[in-house]
Image (tube, rainbow, N blue to C red; front, side):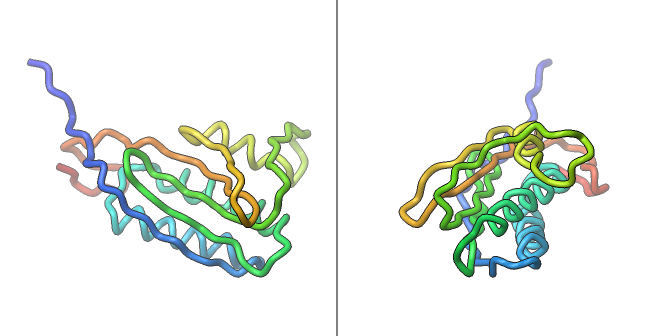
Length: 148
């Protein structure tokens, strides 16, 4: 008998949050992403989602000319995080030396995300990543919670 694990319904949900473009923005963004993952019971790797969110928000505030950036967290067929800023400079992954402290964030995003990209907006640009849902199985997840 072949059985397939049920696929999580593709319910569309979204949160839009304005973040002050300062040093606390990445931590606030991580909290919002964690809250969405738990509230919506999204089967993605939380650690990866918050790490990639932190990278995008850090890049946005580093290049932001305005006072805020906007975080958009959504779900449909995948988990998606977008960061909107007013900069018109397009993001470019940089493969720098391993001992540098900055400059390799987008390479990390590209390697861990299901997809990533950017698009122009009327105010500047948005950079996003998606994470595919893990199978919804009748077993314990990595947090020790029973699923199914």
